[in-house]
Image 1 (spheres, rainbow, N blue to C red):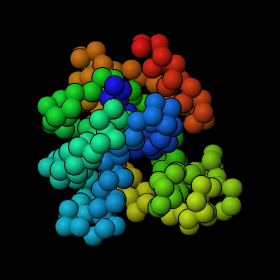
Image 2: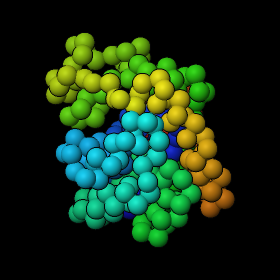
Image 3: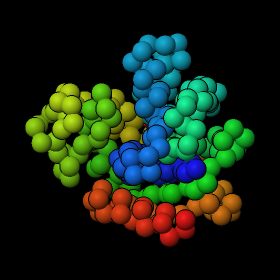
Image 4: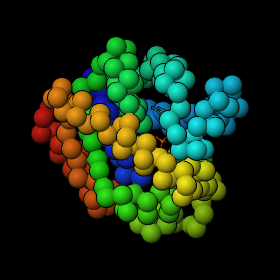
Length: 212
Ligand code: AMP
């Protein structure tokens, strides 16, 4: 049962790779960012509370995120494994995950900060299916519309420059220490995140096959 975490800074391509890998392994892609954005859109009380932190580029409090994650992990399709994207984000969340659903592998990506900023500020996303486009490297076929379902693309509020700076700082301070945490546990595999999404996906598959 593949239970895999994708780790890396915002803009590194985790979401794109998680979708491809989930299809390849026939397991769901669980993104806490997507789940939180759904709660915000649904205007639930959890969503309204989370929205303030998300807009600022800060982490949503652990207990709120854990609540939506537990609910999602409890659904039937997660019983055969999953690709976790965006969780854990700090050591406390990693410990919590070990208690509720220990994971097998952690695949980590990184890129220089300047490349991340370019990827984030040029990112447009489909609000319906979550597909991410990049105006420079992966533009939609029809400007402003999702290739898959034609929905009008939007820019995430937290891809604005001030929130991007905060998100990158939060990653370096709170999430990056997880690399050492998982390295010590022998579960970490670093993946080179440079190049096209297809090149990165190929490296990811090679890394997974190499150890299975
Ligand atoms: P993402 O889509 O993974 O970039 O997440 C977008 C935003 O959702 C983050 O900047 C946080 O505000 C929030 N978020 C997502 N996952 C978590 C998490 N595991 N812990 C705390 N906040 C999170």
